[in-house]
Each structure stands twice: as C-alpha cells, then as structure tokens.
Image 1 (cartoon, rainbow, N blue to C red):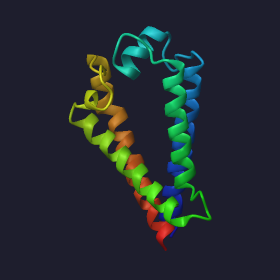
Image 2 (image 1 turned 180 degrees about the vertical axis):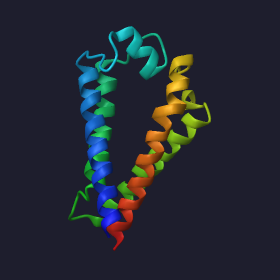
Image 3 (image 1 turned 90 degrees about the vertical axis):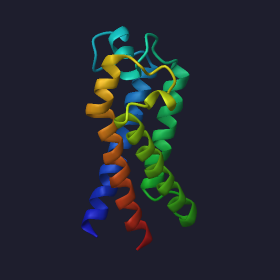
Length: 143
C-alpha cells in the first residue's frame, strides 16, 4: 500500500501546485517566463494569453481534481472513486493528445512551434505521469 499512498500524495501535491500556478497566471504573472508574450507562446501556444477567468476555471478544475484524489468527499466514496477515475482519464487524454501533436483538438489555437515542442517534451509527459499516479491512487481507494 505504500506505493498507492505515495502516488496519491504525488498527485494531490502536483494538482494543487498546478492550481496555484494557474491562479498566479490569472493574476497576471508570466512566471516562469520573463513576459506575457513569451508565456503565451510557450504555455498556451497562441499569441494572446488566456483570460483571468480561463486561468481561474482551470485552477478550480485542478483544485477539484486534487480533492477527489485526496478522497473527498469521504461520505460519498462512489462519487470520489468516479471522480478519481475521471481525473485519470482526462489527464491521460490530455497527455496522449500532446504526445501525438493534437493538443489543438482540446485547446483550439494551441499551435505555436515552441508550444508543440514543450508539449511533447514536458506538458504531455507530466499529464501522463499524473494520470498514472492518479490511477494508482484509485487502487488505494478501492482497497
């Protein structure tokens, strides 16, 4: 059970961190890049950065995903289990789309060369890793 617990902690920590990063981007940060233009090209794949509302929506989705992976709501284990499976599935789909060069099907306009390169090297593998760790965490919830 140690690996399931570690996978759960990894997923919850990463999803929460990514949620916080999206909040920062919604507030206007371009971190880790020097300006909004390079941020938009590298992280979003198009010339214009996402709206604050879009960043906050993604932050809420990631935060909700973290709660589900953490086993919330405890009083509704079937809902929690369905949620964990959904999180793993969505992250897996995003990862596959990125590795195959088809992220624009999920995020229209994400087509810059820099974004595609980073998507294949970093974003898609991260999504697949989180999908796998979330799926492993689901095993913990079933036992």
